[in-house]
Image 1: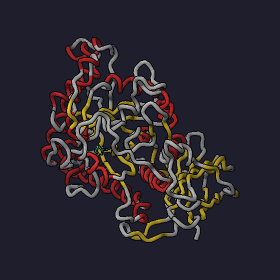
Image 2: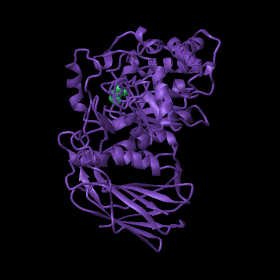
Image 3: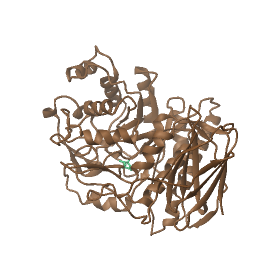
Image 4: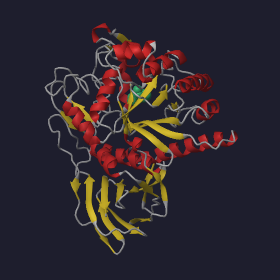
Length: 500
Ligand code: AHR
């Protein structure tokens, strides 16, 4: 049976915030060291930043870059990471049982962003695990105050005369998680987040603040956590965070392919909770969502990997190698974010390099694109504009976790010039999916391109030995006639159909 939907510019979801295409650099494994930063690498610049990686980061189309964690931030002492490199202390990183050299720090992070280009924006997390209000304020003063105070002058002394201008701040990380150093109850966290936010706004009322939401929809405290935290912070923060990672459990691939069903319900449940608190407070303000960690992550094997570590520097950790099937699920997660662009105004793909990442590197060697690189770069390139409201009528399949799930998952974005890009995933492992899209009130006459990521072997991957085994390919036969788009979506495929 054919899957169908209608596109009409009168029915929209909302404008895509460029921050939807954010990512994340944590001091974890080889994300920083031998990832973005490797002095001595043949492509490294004077600051030790790998140019081969920078080129791929630009091509990926990343905007906001969250830093320095993650779980790492809950033990982070920002002052260790600034000033002369030779004076920076080596520290235990409790989150990842590793040794942190602090060779790469705050100034290097800002330099990295500048080199990505003007589209890159800092998104800095403060430590509310082992630290609190005072240290957050010190970091903010060091980073953002122009001059004439001890900490802003210290920044200038360290070689950074111009303030960093960090506008977007995360108030801690995953404080609901028992694994978090300094884990708190919702009440405890709500109070410290509110006090930190209030004080940070005393320095600068225009900062944008993200309060920690839940580390996943399956957390026992989910929803009650958000409600409690927001009761304390509603007027003081702009966003609440969501984190979600997906992998097949017990070989249940069908449910894995429908992971976006969970992601969409997570988003909708957090929106409902935010609006419920807003209603109770009789507030006109809306809290937006920062989905600041999302990805496919084969997490079940990570715990053992980490506990086996004996405080090495930059170990190989969380280096998942993504298949075509993973990239299709990943693309579907991107579709879920775009479908909620009215309320999800920040999102960060966790992470950027080597650690559950779209970009991989070899120390001293090359950098290459994983399968997940392509859906992200295409969505970032063509997913700018207004999201159209897509309601699919699709054949379904059975999943153990989510019941009946649509085979088609889709969204569409209309750019300023009137062109439209359809992003679509066919979840079927066995059959091509015929697609028909009725175009109403859209002056579109031509299919510019239909590109698909799919493979006869859904387990195909890019590796050091075969870095270009999987790349998107053009699809023939897609047509646009009399206001009707017709296409065939290959089994297990991510599709980008550009119309003008
Ligand atoms: O992204 C990897 C880890 O996942 C982050 O450090 C943490 O916030 C989450 O649990």
